[in-house]
Length: 118
Image (cartoon, rainbow, N blue to C red; front, side):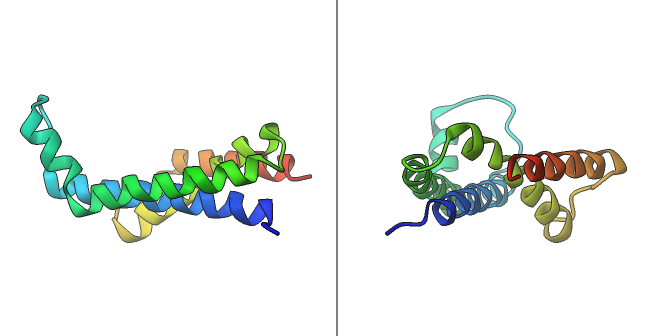
């Protein structure tokens, strides 16, 4: 029997991993000023970007399993925990700025998720 809460949190983890992998890959690709097919190919075949997209795909399937048992009004807002995890991870490991305003936003999100879980 598949635990829907496990699948939900696994889907959130896959989403966070996907975001982080895509960011690392796009840092390697560099800033984009205009669209071109060769650039799109370079982005999609960057190993980190490709892995991030794959992680999203796995998370999507896990989310479908979770939705089969959980109310969407509960499950979907729980994904906001991903915002918190991405912000903290990027601050700690990628050295992105983490201002007092971002901290306040993270606290509001965590409080909202706590309310949903009650």
